[in-house]
Image 1 (tube, rainbow, N blue to C red):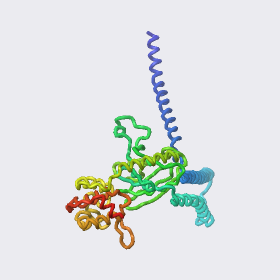
Image 2: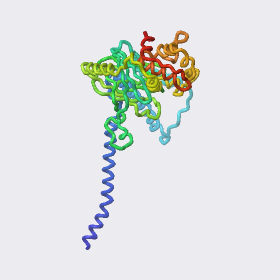
Image 3: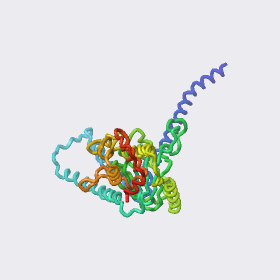
Image 4: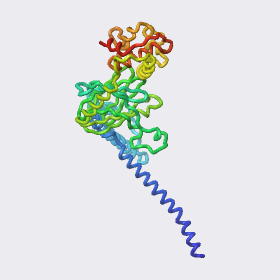
Length: 391
């Protein structure tokens, strides 16, 4: 019995110690894991473009300048506090308007800013130099997806989030590229200078690929541009960096960089797919089908300015409901959509759509506008009329 009681006393004494040791071990492992993650993510993404490398080098360069300033200022401050403390009998010096001190603390920051501004200006100028591209891609932000039009090669597509909703709703484990995967990425060849024309079809978005050093706002009614040259094949991920609505976090950017031969094969396949999917401009459509298709075209391209109700936002964006254009001669309506509106020699917010939308889409959206809301013209525009008007 005495042995049993002694064993119980030992167990009671050891259990709290064991629990504390176990807790300490768990905490240690958590801290080690956190440190490992911090070590992995403490800096910018590794750059793969010339601009990305300049941004990365500029970041490191300015960071070390800040570190030197921090150490110097606080070293002097702490030394002064410690070496001239009151307990050693020091008395605070009484002086005012020391010209030398004021000159020094003006000149030194000036030269520091000069050493920081020169490389920063050089990098910014390089970022804005979009001349002599090897290819041009138009990037359009929508709520909540990206459209890519390969202007030089005559095809385009829309890139949507691929992450399953079962992962988003925590019904299954999240994947490696959670919310950073798409059904169809932008594809570019390695080593080629790619100019991107960036705009939006509804609200302000921002096309951002950190490894490329590219971050450009996509603004409705404006076309901004940037460029990159990826020197390393691979898949690079980014996302919209401008709050654009309730699903802002669900519109990633994915760019796949391929060797030249693989890119050529991919582009050829895309061209064949676009040709196969193209509508016959000679086809005569039923007005009801045109209106149904036109509603989708209008929502994607026109509703941001003219509103889903057709009421517009006067005076910047005139209403289409009851307008002279949408209820008047079809030729004038067609000319407006194809060529935009020009006043005083300058384009207004109404941009030309003849090179952006297909003849069928233009015919559909005009038919929709003439037969929706309070407009009941009753006519229909066929793709052949659009083709004839574009000549």
